[in-house]
Image (cartoon, each protein chain N blue to C red):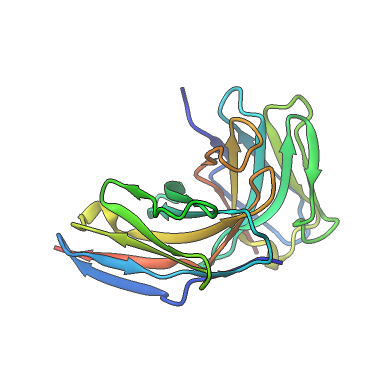
Length: 114
Length: 115
């Protein structure tokens, strides 16, 4: 079974600074996807960024980028120029089945200080 | 169009009561997922529908949990004889097709509290 581990229960960052959230996973599959989801206090989960395992190039979406290390099974999220609206719970998720079932980590609460 | 909606947003049940949680996916979305999220934890997969077919129910924690999607749109998650350990937020998500590349859009969840 696949597992996803987020070892940082909480992180904080100053507005306009950069922060990196860590995630490791375990799988025996060779083809899969990895995701970062954001869950603000309103609870609606929103996709931030995704990475296809067979692509060596790290995904980027505006201020969000990932550092994907396949051999190390590591998938970190970097948020640049942090904004107050980035404050939320962030979940790393693994998707390895054909239809999109996701396995989530425990989450990291990100606080952004003005 | 509208996103995924869930009702009720909050549900309080006495232990032993049956509850029904509703999910309205985005119109035209083929795939529908239910997840259970305990307080302070990540969501855990419960079950998956492709149209009206329930293709994976491996995450349902017991036979007290039952889900259906009879017409391939609205889905209902039913919990019989609720227990305190069923207290959680139940999230529904839908996606356009059935590929892993299809973005899952989540609803706001139903917070179930069992007293």
